[in-house]
Image (cartoon, rainbow, N blue to C red; front, side, top):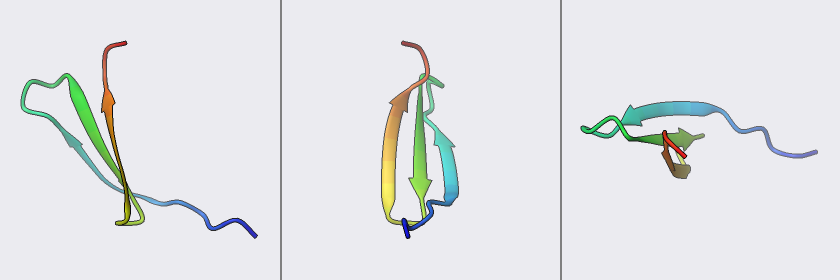
Length: 35
């Protein structure tokens, strides 16, 4: 089966415009809050 991802950490940047998501402590994503 497909390994499940668990959201383990969420951090907002100081300006509040980006969010850093960490899944399973390995996969990290940086996303813009505003499109």
